[in-house]
Length: 238
Image 1: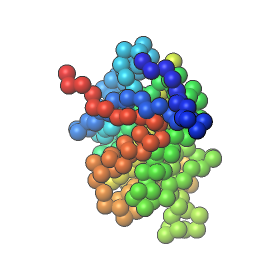
Image 2: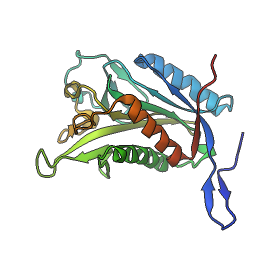
Image 3: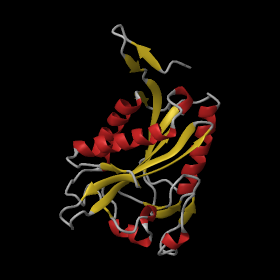
């Protein structure tokens, strides 16, 4: 296991060392409880140094998740889809087909043990990915996630295009981010997404970008490598 976090170049500049991160991609939607159990197992293995870090790309069947700060008054349609309580930070969110989820399992002790920096890096991955598709994603100090200005709707209108929710155990991250590629946006109406009632939700398709999940994946993974100094590898075939 490599323990250095950076490399000093001859000119005195510091460059992050690329670390091998397994990249797992699930073709079919994954049950939420199944995904959570798999993350729990992998996080324990990473903490014990018996498995490499991982980024897992997947979709879920339609469902709502309640984070540790969820207000159940924000669950407007409790019988519409299954509701899962989850240990990640944040409030209510929707997951479903057409939404790319990236569960990110990294050992921050081998990188930078700074939660705010990790969240900022996830946001940066999303913002860079959106830029490739001519969409300007922005951070907001008072709201979690990545936002898009909507001058076509009303003055000052903004919609959320990507959500973040993370958890750490022994400095190993899990859960991660979700990016709306082409989900059914009406499904978000059963909750107050992330507790923010005065803004809407959008997607690449809603913004006129007719791109598929696989095309988004290629860009997202490339930006993940750039931002985190990672070298993505396929998991071994078992």
